[in-house]
Image (cartoon, rainbow, N blue to C red; front, top):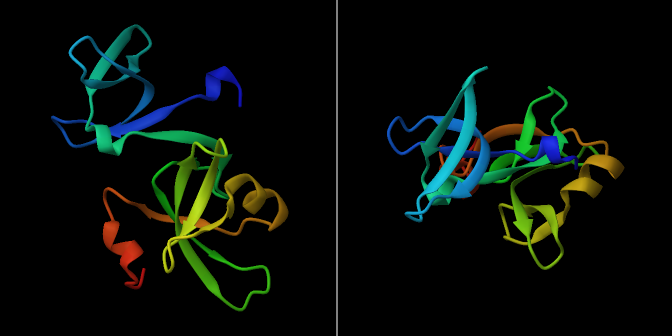
Length: 139
């Protein structure tokens, strides 16, 4: 991933809207995402720490960016069964993975999934706005 593609998202504490940009902790240990609001104004937004997720460097077929915390749904290569899971970062293996919603185990790396299985996944939500999607309810 190139340095200009490193991006984070988080839910702003005031507006509860998603903001996208560079992530840091300020001097008061608040979680902040900085972004350009207009070409000349750099804005800092305090975000809820639990909502911060990194862009994986991968995009869905629609061109939308895949972020840590996204909930994805896919059809397996065989075409016979659907899967649903959450995009997570695993620091032991230094990579993004999809955790299956049914059994909570790693399906496989997100990179392998997109490269070798002709990723037919689509984003159906994220764990912060749609946690019910991982509880077995229909999408």
